[in-house]
Structures are given as structure tokens and as C-alpha cells.
Length: 401
Ligand code: HEM
Image 1 (cartoon, protein in one colour):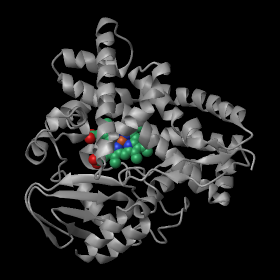
Image 2 (cartoon, helix red, strand yellow):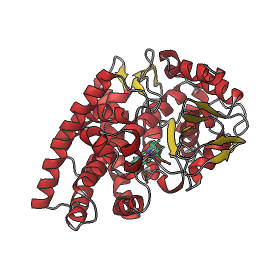
Image 3 (cartoon, protein in one colour):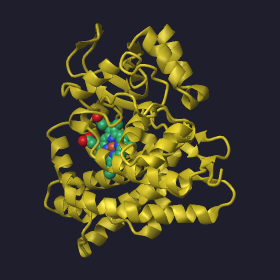
Image 4 (cartoon, rainbow, N blue to C red):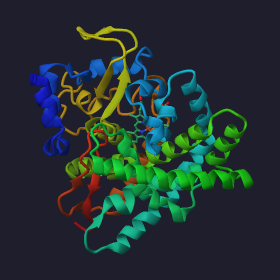
């Protein structure tokens, strides 16, 4: 094993997944671009930024999976996931992304803001009613908010939204790099349940169209603009991508603020501060820690020769703790000079929901910290142990200090 491979093995251990940052630093110090088997890991900011911005680096798409993972079309989870927008290159990527653009234009965004401003006080009331003991911020606030927003966007009835939380988490194991076999079974079961649910919902929208994205996508599919699998894949991916990541952001930012009382105080006092808090949270604890790309032709990256058709893993969590880009990178410091975070990826695949999730966090954080001025941790936060997604399994808080 090379020194870099040893660091990567430690990174993938339960201790490494609980706190990946020391291992990221070790990896970057050894080599900001390093090889482990057939895969290259990028831990330096410049290397990650360069790869994410450059259209020559493509995403793993159905043609790639046909070669590397024959049989992926026989597994429901991979069949749906790998035909959705994030796993396609042009011309299919532009075709699918265009169909989603309307849901993120100014008119719906204004409606989502109004919804968020209505939903948050209700959730905070419910948290207050659940006291005086500790409450879990993830189940009480961080998940329900984006679940409501995504439910509204896609027209998922309120009664069904909670059920999707666990299903979505299991389904998304397909994106984890190292899923074990029990996770694979849960993933398939979740994918089958999602498939049944969305098939029925699409059928319903065919019979009775509504003003939601599911109806728009169903009509586009009926007009021949996307296949039945693509329709299902896009709807399922969008719902899951939209709530898990945003819940992660809300949980991460809350923990960071609780660990920095002066920053929390400034957030309470200064209406203009929340933007900097959200950006710094995204930098310091990016919810999506891993963004993959492929090389087309062979290339040289930061002096390292890389063969054609090779998988590159941009370790965004490592890149954003690169001291060459961010001095004193392990400190949560919203007042640091702004830079371009890589937390939403880059290039043509740049996250379509970035503005929406930033808006959700920017509304909920000041409301939370103002409503509960003595908000404090009430136990040890538990993290999910997955490299791809940096988020809490639970975040116990006390509302009255
Ligand atoms: C804090 C919250 C979020 C984070 C950290 C996040 C992160 C990401 C990342 C890293 C990518 C991959 C970009 C790339 O390959 O360069 C991505 C893509 C995507 N995200 Fe997000 N996301 C968030 C919220 C959302 C929301 C709220 C939605 C939907 C409402 C969403 C929908 C998507 C879609 C559809 C793509 C694929 C875009 C494409 O391939 O063109 N995301 N996101």
C-alpha cells in the first residue's frame, strides 16, 4: 500500500468518516492529486476547482456504466439514478436540465420563499411545544423544512412526505462509494417503494394535471422529451437531492453556530450576516463531500499524468480546508474574505437547487436563533458515517440553555 492509500483507508474507517478533516489534510500534504488503484483523488482546492469547471471532465453516464457495471439496468436503484440528469452528458444532460429550469425561475422561487417563511414559524412552535427536554433538531426542523419545499415543488401530498425521508436516505446509498451488502438490500427496497409511489403519482397527473413539476415532467414525457425511466429518475433524484442536502446544511450550520456563540449572537443582531454564515458553513462542512468526474482523453493534472477514461474523485471537503486557499481553514469564520465555494459542484452540472437551499438556510437560521436565544447542545451530536454526505443522524438541542 502506498502512503496515500494508507491515508485513504483511514479516511474510510468509522473514525475517519466521523471526522475526515485530519485525513484530508494528511492526504493533501502527501499529494493534492493522488492515485489509489484505478481512481485519482483530488484534495487540493485548485485541482478540484479546475476539474469541476472544465467541460472536458464528464460525469459517469449510462455508456460508462454499461462498460464498468454491466447489469446496472437490472437493479431498480441504479436504473433510475443513472438515467437522471446528474448522470448524463450532453446532449442528454442539456435536454433534461432544460426541463427543470422552470421550477427554479423567479416566480416559483418567490413562492418557495413565502412557503419557507410560513413553514418555519410553525416548525419552531412545534419544537417549543415538544420541550422542555432536549429535541432533535434534525427530525424537528432540518428535515421537515426542505421536505415541505420539495413536496410543494413536486406536488407530493403532505401526508406522504415524512415516509420519503427514510426511503430517500436508503435510496441515495447508490451514490455512496462504499455501500455494504445490507445497505444495498435496503437501497433496492427503497427504490422499489419509490418506483411504485411515483408511477402511481405520474398516472394521477396524467388523469388530473396540476400546477406542479411532476405534471410538467409528465407532459414533457408524453410529448417525447424524456423517457419513462428518465421521468421517474429525475423526479426521485430531485426529491431526494433537494431535502437531504439542505437538511445537512441546516444541521451543520446550527452545530457550527452553537460552537461559536459570538457568531450566533451576531447572527441574531445583524440581518445582513446570514449570507456570510451560510457560505462559511458550506465551506467548512460541505454537505456533499465528494463530486466525481471522468477524464476523456489522457491528461496531466497538477503535474500528475492521468490516463483516459479514468475516475477522478474531487474531495470537496478537503479542497475547502486547503490552507493555500483559506488561511486557518479549520476555523468556522463567517467574516473571512468570501471565496468561491465548491460545495455545489461546478460547470454545467452546477447544482440547480443551490439558490433554493441557500434561501432555506438564510431564512431558517436567524429565525431559529432569535426564537430560542438560549439554544444549546443537549448531548453529543451523532453523524451519519458516509463519505459522500456530511450530515447529522441526530442533533439534540435544548431550547432554554
Ligand atoms: C445544501 C444543499 C445542496 C447541496 C450541498 C447540493 C450539492 C450538489 C452537488 C455537489 C451537485 C453535483 C454538481 C456537479 O456535479 O458539479 C449537485 C447537483 C444537483 N443538485 Fe444539488 N445540492 C443541494 C441542494 C439541492 C436542491 C435543494 C436541489 C433541488 C431542489 C438540488 C438538485 C440538484 C440537481 C438536479 C443536481 C444535478 C444537476 C446537473 O447535473 O445538472 N440540489 N448538488
